[in-house]
Length: 154
Image (cartoon, rainbow, N blue to C red; front, side):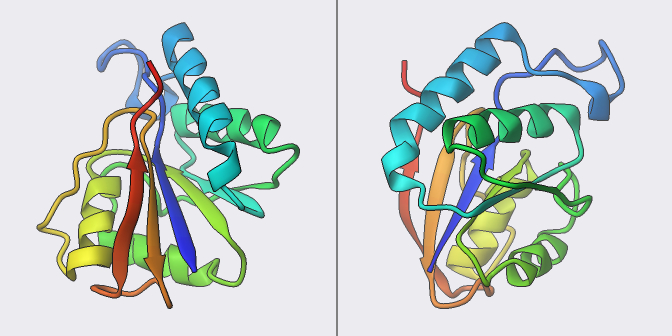
């Protein structure tokens, strides 16, 4: 199975609003749109699960439009400072269908480390808008292999 992980697009700067309410910038929206369009052939997903933070929600909505109506599910266990082990439980919960997870740093990098290296202390660098695919039989610690990672098209 493939587990698809994405960091939200470029958002408003820290401090301008409470963190959960920070929106994607115009550049962030454009880059996320381009990322989904470029990766569409690689994303055989049947749903998108995302953080409740506005910038992740907006990223997921753009993905649902490009991927033609892919259903969206919000999950409060995918916020920036959540425990990767808790986020891993989210991946297990939705393992029945191919799913894209839209979340944040530092969680997404730590989650990839947990999946691929067995430790959330190993952090995979993830820029804004970046997509990664983890191949695994089941989403469990140390059971994955990073199949590919794509930066936002420039």
